[in-house]
Image 1 (tube, rainbow, N blue to C red):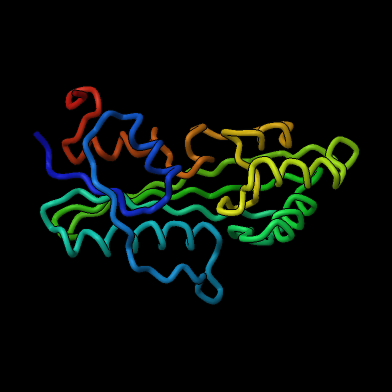
Image 2 (image 1 turned 180 degrees about the vertical axis):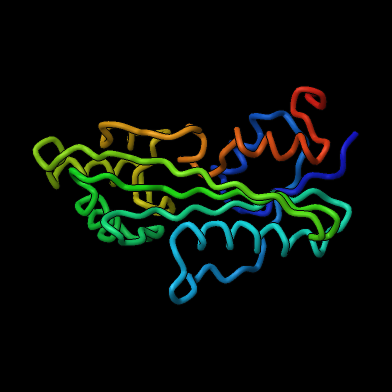
Amino acid sequence: MHAPLILASSSPYRKELLSRLGLDFATQTPNVDETPLGGESFVNTAIRLAREKALWIAKRHPEAIVIGADQVAVCNDQRLDKPGTNAHALEQLQLQRGQTSVFYTAVCVAGLGGDRTEEAMVPTQVRFRGVEELPDTLLQRYIEIEQPLDCAGSAKSEGLGITLISAIEGSDPTALIGLPLIALTEILNRFGVSALKHYP
């Protein structure tokens, strides 16, 4: 047996990814302000927020091992948040046409009430198809079908968003969806949690 496992997130995408490991876990939503700090780099924002989410839950559940994660999407030095509306999603996709966006995905595991933490950051480069292949009419059709309003950058690679993309480069395909499982399993092993050993 291992300590209780808590995913510090309300994201259905992260919940689905963690479920792939077959581990029992609970989910809780941390109360963390996700506003970037002045002068903070995109990478540092992702790492800090992953840490703060994990610590917020860990301090309230010192018996648990807590997983926090955050992702910052960037195109042409512009941060792409969750669009929220169809119009904003279209603006994000127009910006990314023919460009390469970088998705910085951070994960932090906290234990002992936050006295122990380990972190990792996994970047993923996503190259989008050009305007000739992605006219506004097709982008609007995609948005209507997929409704990617809760997805930073507005392109769900695990769904129809893959049709907008010409190439993906990164060390972990799950990082782009929001939780880098390769890095996470390495960290969990050091916390004494092995997906293979504890698989039901």
